[in-house]
Each structure stands twice: as structure tokens, then as C-alpha cells.
Amino acid sequence: MTDDCLFCRIVAGEIPATMVHETDDTLAFRDIDPKAPVHVLVIPKAHHRDVAALAFADPGLTGKVMAACAAVAEQEGLTGDGYRIIFNVGAHGGQEVFHVHGHVLGGQPLGRMLSV
Ligand code: 5GP
Ligand code: ZN
Image (cartoon, rainbow, N blue to C red):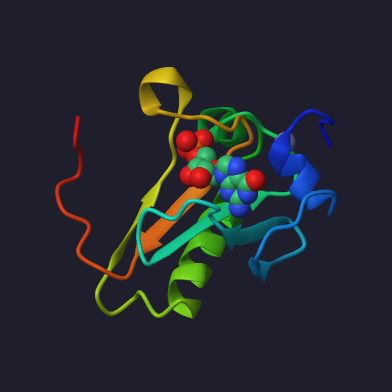
């Protein structure tokens, strides 16, 4: 738990979020500003600043986060038409919240991979 981290505070129940999936090690909740009909954020409960830090520190937990992303996609009905999982890293990656999170996006065609 990092006191000044928004997503640690969601894990702690200090800030409300619309939960869609939970395991012992992961949490998934709807993005407050959705960019697609389905936009869910999947996080490890433990604090790691980005997916690279998580992957180096705890490969097992990284796998659990990916499995949670897949479970959310299935639960949200995205497996037939497909979906996208995004992990933004750092400034050029557009990361704004520095607690690693996978964006699970779907529910409509998502277009080009990048729009810069
Ligand atoms: P990033 O740009 O760091 O990859 O993504 C951060 C995401 O967190 C954004 O899509 C933003 O809409 C979402 N977000 C920011 N604050 C909150 C919040 O308080 N609650 C929820 N559910 N999502 C948030
Ligand atoms: Zn955190």
C-alpha cells in the first residue's frame, strides 16, 4: 500500500470504484472515463509502478494479472469479437497513474493500433 497512490487507495476501499472481477491478488474495475463500450482496468493488489517493474519483480503475479485480463474479457462477452489489452508505460506511453494496470477495451471495432 502506497498512501499517495490512487489505485492502492481503491484496493484499500478508500476510493469507490465499480468492481467487475477480483482474485486474491488482482482487482478489476470500470475506468472512470471509458474510451470504449467496455473499458476495465485490471491491477495487481500489490503496488508496482508499471508493467515492466512488475514483470521483473514478480513474473508469477504478472501472469495472474494477464489471466485476470482474460477472465474479464470473457466475463464482459468480448472473446467472440475480440478486444485489446493495453499497458501504458511512462510519459511517451501516456501513463498517468503509476500503479500498473491493464486496460481491457472492447465492445466495438477499435480501429488502428495507434493514433498519434
Ligand atoms: P493510464 O493513462 O495511466 O494508462 O490510465 C489511467 C486510467 O485511469 C485512465 O483511463 C483514467 O480514466 C483512469 N482513472 C483515473 N482516475 C480514476 C478513478 O478515480 N477511478 C477509476 N475507476 N478510473 C480512473
Ligand atoms: Zn499503488
